[in-house]
Length: 395
Figure 1 (spheres, one colour):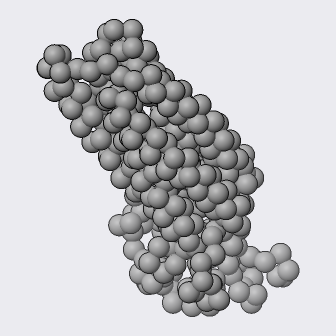
Figure 2: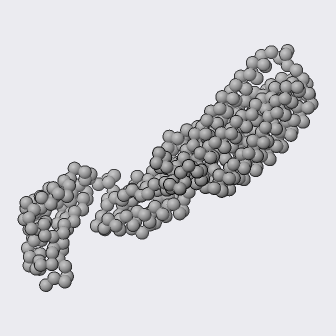
Figure 3: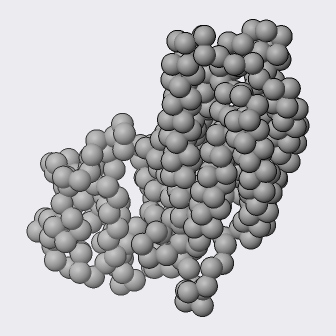
């Protein structure tokens, strides 16, 4: 039994952008614009200052800040499009736009880091061409370190408040920038002390740090795009939530997959095979709401099973209802199936049948029919049991 997919975009919302989570959207927009402003200033100071101060490490860090600026623009795009409501072509929403943006950002950073590393290594092949840096480089590096550390703390606080994976990634990216600025400071100080090669070594280390961070982001985003499940602890917590729902007798085929900061859950729950369809649906909806309430999940799809079909014999080969009615009519008479209500239960590779007699049937007729049914079951390969029910109001 499948339950509802996420809410579709209403007709009134077509043509006008309305974010799914306005608070999260606004916070992400504000923090990203703050980051853009800081990175514009840092890029200009570091690249220009590094050029005139003859510091390769500071220029490498400036390119790092430039990559942050480009990534901020990407975050703005992903934040807007990822917050769109579900529509006919995207019934689960657009949250994976954030994941795709993280993959692009991570790949770009990995490539940039490798390029910076190779450039520094090539310059180190010619130590005679190395130059002493100007003390101005140290002042700019200290300023950049303070700015990046402050930006990291601000962005991480916002990301945790609105629970955005992409903003958390962007915040830690800012922390990696702060670490790279610290490396630049060490390299510049070493250069000023006479170890001129340390500036290029710092540039190479910055390249390695950028490549490592980019590779990590790209791998995490790729894992989500190929539907990697939640961690074992969260899956077990969801399992326990489902099992606590009244009416759920068992659970199997619990599957999860991440979707940006949320998750999608599929579960097969077992219920009493003799309850009504409507009660089974009620249990499924209760189980779905329990997971949505207690876990950070976007949607839950619950399938109702009367038995553990991972262990029980499959029932797909059994005849359909019309064929079973014809089978019973042939052996018990046409009137048994045409005048009475017959319910079938497909269980463990066989069929249980319940025959609810019409009001005009006497107790003697019901007993006689039960005897015939018992005889049929002993010789029949399809039916496991047939029960005849007679209303207590009958005489």
